[in-house]
Length: 244
Image 1 (tube, helix red, strand yellow):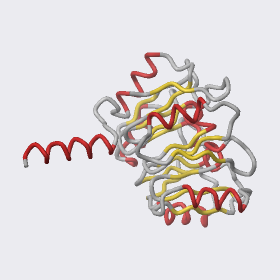
Image 2 (image 1 turned 180 degrees about the horizontal axis):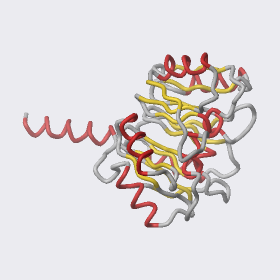
Image 3 (image 1 turned 60 degrees about the horizontal axis):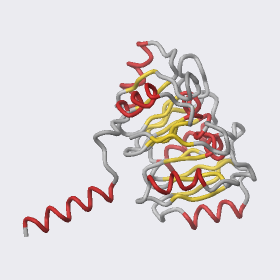
């Protein structure tokens, strides 16, 4: 089930957080509320407070999945060290020397495929493929080059800009190998990347998101039928106990 969240009166949860299947980053803020919402819903993965280049807009500044996390060159050594220490050992944390430094706006990825801004450097593209362990495609979404801002997808499904044509949807779906739906968040906002974060079993949308938008998010990300890893582990353990 998708959950509504708010960061200090802002519904742009995708700006102030980054969620993957292995970890979650949240911005350092005055209110503990935002962090608590994520912590309560994500008992299986580390939820880490962080800043990038001294800013709180971490969701727009970094790109990552369960394999790695890419940070802009402006990230301080202290911030880099903090994230390396806080995240699981399997996650590779690396800085990228890239002119387009708001990586969250320029890259959208799951654990297998990444869509990237058409003007990213060739070196950056190779780094994305190596660190995140993904196949990389240069794409636009409904004519927008900021793919990270206008699309959110996991290994189970994805939400894209509401004006994406049926042909584009089919092409993107076959590239990503996941079902996609064109939709909005935060009561009609087209910038889905800013108003929504999701992984394979949880999603967080902005506080202004309507019930209809939430039900679309639930169905496309298959959240009603997915369960957290700890629940699967408990079910398996109790099943084994019953059989034994």
